Image 1 (tube, one colour):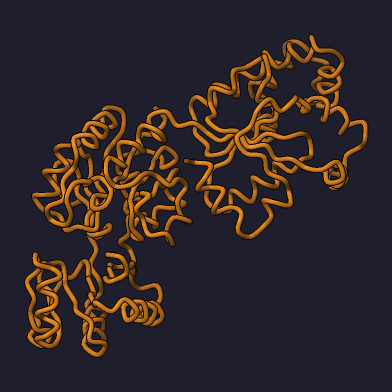
Image 2: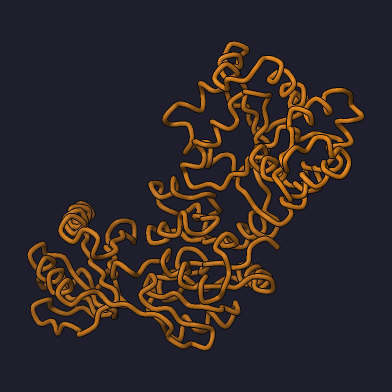
Length: 447
């Protein structure tokens, strides 16, 4: 299995039956995560405070670590506290003062909500029956606060208050909006699910290149560009989905479905197209959204470098292609285009090296011109194929931009001119360069 460590959110994600304190994990999700735990470290990553409920869930799924309060507390498998951070006390006092002025209710690491007038107290006792509501003017400020929650039934006020806090405190705290925009969640600047993932990867000695995170809220977004793959539930707020590598499934059995389809046997998206069609340019744009990409040209450039596997292969059968420990790629290219037998010989030698790399590494997208070659089973590594197409005029412009001699690009074209046998999506240069293209593309391609 490719993935070695999984970070899993609870509410709205793993816990798919019931809501709030009554939320539970379904047998379907439980069975799937237990299957995952046989080959992968499991990390509970939640905004909840550490509790016996969290521990009980962890025992059911064989959790190795517990990230609580969005990373303000981290516990190991033996329930030892291995990391904690609190919000600066002066900042806590300032936030309380601002909450009073804005008539915003506030909670510190507990089930007690401090709020304003009696009518509002009554309203909150109805909305949050599991919370104890007290007057904000009779507050006893805790000495150490790891997380602050700010409540209001006015979603527009919450939005404005968040912007105010972000401007006032800048990079001193982490701020998220949860509960459909009615609640602001605050932790210390050094506490986030993303930073917790970095910390745990070091403790567990596991590269985050082999990690994924699955969640449904804004506090899960901090793992983007840290874990290899971020999966957001389909029930996540619409504005958050653009941050996901993959949009998963709705809450009910959603984790199990995501694991079965994206994790247990992850497959990449193949990017194909003729020589100079714009595959690399397309993938450079894809990388800007945080997706991992393998360029086979770069892969083989390194493979043919001194002392690497492809270099040694050529050195053994054609030592005259090597000068001063550098491969003469023109000679190799000429040898391959001379006849089909030569081409097959080289491909049969070097393609297994790429196959082995794809078996041991995962990329969201792979640029692979010769997907349908008879000399390798590359199709086994991909579940969808995207054809990057270009008009003849555009192809000539792209070739001109490469600044290579006609003789060279004609040979490259011959080596990369395999017929496109099938594809799931065909994309022209003009289409993918539209500003609105990529968010829709990523949502559809990973369905």
